[in-house]
Length: 372
Image 1 (cartoon, one colour):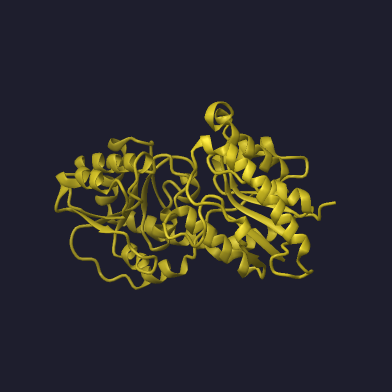
Image 2 (image 1 turned 30 degrees about the vertical axis):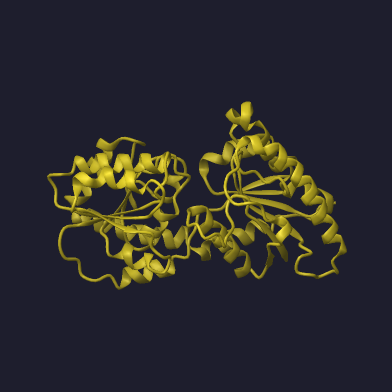
């Protein structure tokens, strides 16, 4: 099938690393793995970044013009042309970056419309976010299939589906092979347990996660450990200041390439991330695939990727004291760390590897009906 992949939030070829980019790249790989021909024509691409709510009216008007040009171009292309797509597939749709184009184009052409990872928040229906919120409602009402990745989105999405729409579950996924391979060749560990965290260094939720992490470190001063923080961004100076009291136990690796990440995970003993307002966290899957047990905040879709008591420990969100207790428990019990680590790798391979995701996506796309 010829598929147009539309990624309003972040393009797969974006130079800025994030979980959204990795999911966009992963969906592109899945579609190609299933034999679909994927295009991302220039007319379907939108400006990077999240616009201010004041810009939404202009974006809505621009979408009408852009959609009309896409439809006109589609109709002018010969049958079988790669850009004469048979399916519109949007990854990520929420009130700050909705899919303005998909409902217009698919409605005009009568082709199936699929959204992966949509969210609907009724509290955004009023005020400056109302236009983006309404655009999400239009998209959900027009969709033939919504693939839900985060369990907390299930109810909101279901309530806004049109009569033709279906909602199916697509577990978050990664290509687990490089991480499992790194775990298999892990060198013998020497010295205190190494704690690892991976996260963009941004303000707001990410910075709050680092604050909780620093609060936990302060409560673990009497134990033997060292930590490595991977990531970079505009809030790095604030985060380094938060961690300064723990020098030299806490080191900073900065931004690390995708190719270097598996070995870095495999060098650690325990993965930590407080996950303030985290959707689900691709790094949790990477760490577990590399054989690391996880301590995380119980928020959003995190329980869908970290099984409490099976592959890691989940703690109340934002509670540095509870987070420290969970870390201390695993620092004090190497056998428990090993048990969780083994289960983590098995669980990712069974439920969150690309091969499992490809099967789930193929089954979901097989439910689509031709529009009439």
